[in-house]
Image (tube, rainbow, N blue to C red):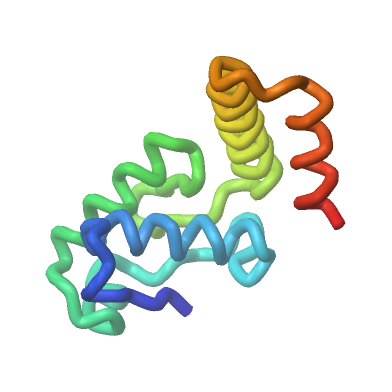
Length: 119
């Protein structure tokens, strides 16, 4: 189930995208499973169909879902999404490590901070 937070600063279509990504990553929406139609999901979430259409279009461009003409939109394999998320997270980690090094933090301190988060 996708939860929308109207107090969130992110646009609704971004929240819809994140909700669908989460459903695929957790297996709640398995590979090949049909997503609700634009009309169905817009009615369920009480949002404009154009908002859902935009979310689906962007998710398709990202490879998270795929569309079969006149059949519907389906969940793509989660492995590609996991790999992309992993690459993004490692990129953010490298940027954070570079920022810490620029502040004079040693490699040992960075590793200790990571170990602390792991415990």
